[in-house]
Amino acid sequence: DIQMTQSPSSLSASVGDRVTITCRASQSIRSYLNWYQQKPEKAPKLLIYAASSLQSGVPSRFSGSGSGTDFTLTISSLQPEDFATYYCQQSYSTLRTFGQGTKVDIK
Amino acid sequence: QVHLVQSGAEVRKPGASVKVSCQASGNSFTSDYMHWVRQAPGQGLEWMGIINPSGGSTRYAQKFQGRVTMTMDTSTSTVYMELGSLRSEDTAVYYCARDHDTFDAFDIWGQGTMVTVSS
Image (tube, rainbow over all chains, first blue to last red; front, top):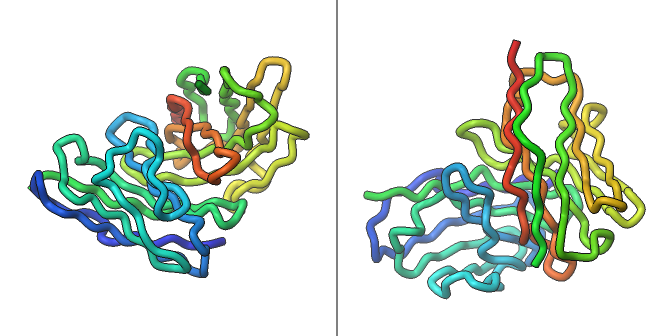
């Protein structure tokens, strides 16, 4: 199976900060990388698909980049509603796998 | 607009099995692959498997091989996930999710079903 490793596991940030989360795959997954946001007691929400494509309705402060094995999710200016846990997921293989998650909380 | 509605919370004893349903509305049911994902309390997301409603073929994560069965009923646009030989570590919220046919991502999720395994 393809292993996905996110870093950091958690971070503290302030409103208005630029936040970057990284995700590394154990093998090349080309651009088959998705990002999800999850708030407590809620189902995950798709933010970015195919490494850099913004899902409909998602604010433009979210962006994704990377290909091969290394990927990044960036929030350009953190808003109060962005405090949540973020997961990367590879869709290169039918046997999908998620990163362990990055919790973004208030500094 | 596609909508996924899951069955309600379940409580089971260790060694028992549980079957969770996920009914789709607003789409052509047989055109979208469906996945199951679970999340133990305070933990991350764990992919369990996929079912192709057009034909019923399945693939499961190695961890669940032999314990999980995913099925479907096209007459009611419902997919099912049955997990057997339950243990306390299977206590989790179980989600179904639609795999968008163009961009291979889970764009629609069910609301989640809490399964508690306790003696």
